[in-house]
Image (cartoon, rainbow, N blue to C red; front, side, top):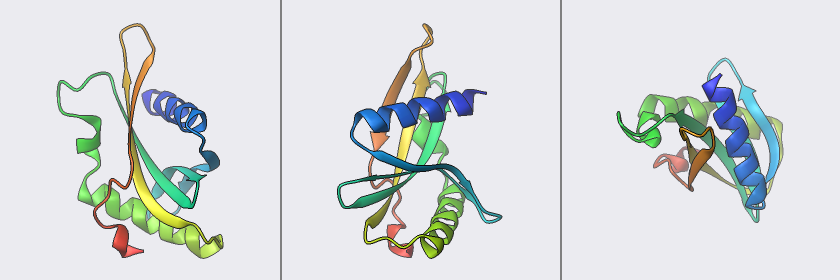
Length: 118
């Protein structure tokens, strides 16, 4: 439930920042992309991490190398099925649920070091 709430908050945040959402929860047997969005000349494959606080580490720290590899594989699958001239990149959106139920959102653009893998 927390993950779905965080993804909805991340999607709302990205729309407010001018992103056009192309898809959510794109799944393959190799991996999943939480949000696929475009803005300007970029196509962002977005991993969303939701936490109640950062007491046990920042949300972005939970996007491990293994998780990145699975997102990259899913993105490659999506790109193979959807022709685009946009430059792909990998973003992370951290969503923290405050005590009052509101969201604190932190968007990290080009967060994966393996972007060259595409």
